[in-house]
Amino acid sequence: MIRIAESGVRGTGDLLAYAGAGADAVLVGEGLVKSGDPRAAVADLVTAGTHPSCPKPAR
Image (tube, rainbow, N blue to C red; front, side):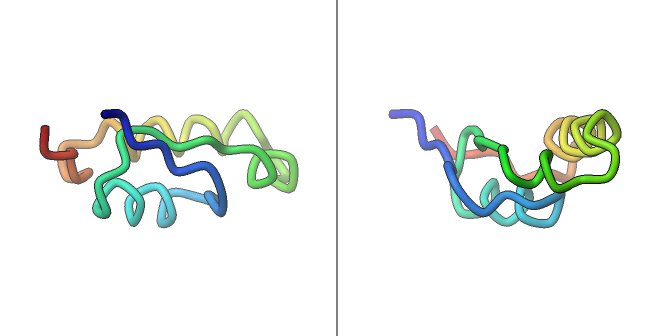
């Protein structure tokens, strides 16, 4: 089963919280739209999601 967090992802803190709660992926929408620099926001999320300290879901 793949767990996807579909709401409330406003930045890296939310991504890490969802990952810590077991999410395999996050769906980001409004957080990017409201960002002053969507490209930088995506880069920050990717960096946080691939960082070794990011919680990995148990399989």
